[in-house]
Image (cartoon, rainbow, N blue to C red; front, top):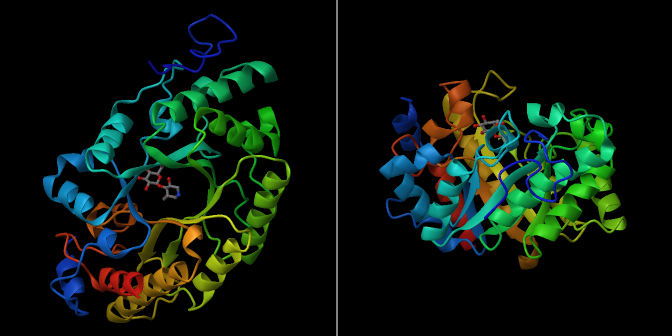
Length: 355
Ligand code: 9MR
């Protein structure tokens, strides 16, 4: 049975703690063929979406997911914020439900995410400064989580968002303070590989299309990991982009990431209307540009050699389920509307994937 706490495997000490509404109109504003085939049936690679356990209780959404996608990423319930309890124990009920849905529908699971600067649970913070004990707890967490989904997980976002916001250097975190800037990253990859010899081990980040410095630092980190012998075997580009992103930026980013020869994961794609910087654009123009952004992304991904197309993941299928819509009800970032009908973005993806 899998481990249930920070110290439950390879323990170093015996103590318990050781440790909306405008969707329909939007969808009609650009024409979409009535008989659009499901994305997964036309794409020559896996189509992913993120999911929360509660989404699986919505029969319409569960059916849409099973019809369109063949890979699932847990939107937040495979992160430390969910798994690690204040007393250092682990809980797996929600991630197990998501995994069971993936298994039942013959889908791959994308593990997201093991080490994230943004999440440093109390139980880890309370561990004393002893570097060896902390490293054991860190390894123990990665081993427990990765082993649990071995066989089903096609990949893991081993380290998420390692590069500083402005692109200059790496982010500081509890992990870097205790285990070292580079060392904690390399250790995460080596440990994940121990737990799963097959899964693609990804480095995942965002703004790589917007920020040239960040992209360069991201690629340098990847190269340094490879040079050190760390088993980094894929690169994830989240792609939370806005509809007014300049044409060409996405293509350039995808091409540059691919220059290392590793498989590429478009890992969290959504195209926000309301985050556009250009506030003068009409809703209709934003929707037109949104479709163009989905098209450019799919075309750039299709231009990669087959062996470098790891998967193409949408961060939610319907507008109403998106984190962006929760933040701003006026947004409509997805390729299916609130009723699950394909928008022009879905048609653009199908056209590109078929080409
Ligand atoms: O969409 C996710 C949201 O539901 C969660 O509350 C949040 C924190 O766990 O994470 C969001 O997903 C993020 C992803 O894990 C990493 N890249 C940015 C995503 C959007 O914030």
